[in-house]
Amino acid sequence: VFHGLENNEEIFCETSSLGSLYRSEFSRQLRLYEATFHGLGIPYGLFYTDRPWDSSLKQFLSRSNG
Image (cartoon, rainbow, N blue to C red; front, side, top):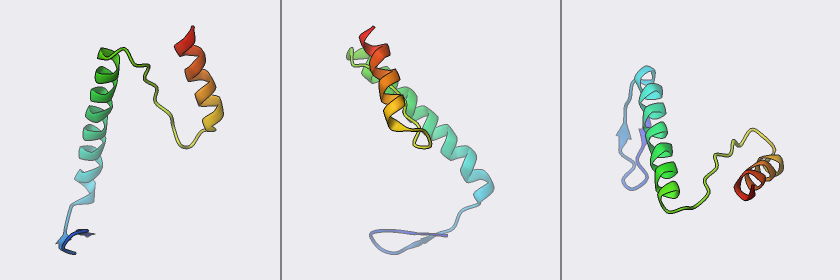
């Protein structure tokens, strides 16, 4: 059960199908970001929150500048 932020409406969902839909939409959104940034000539990198940010940033910057 999800509760709406504006009106506190309850939304019921089947969790077994929600995960697959979420992953699909998340993947689509990542592809959109990557394509948009690439099209504008802006470096794009994906950072994972379960890894140290400083090593990820170092790797991204070394790739972007080299």
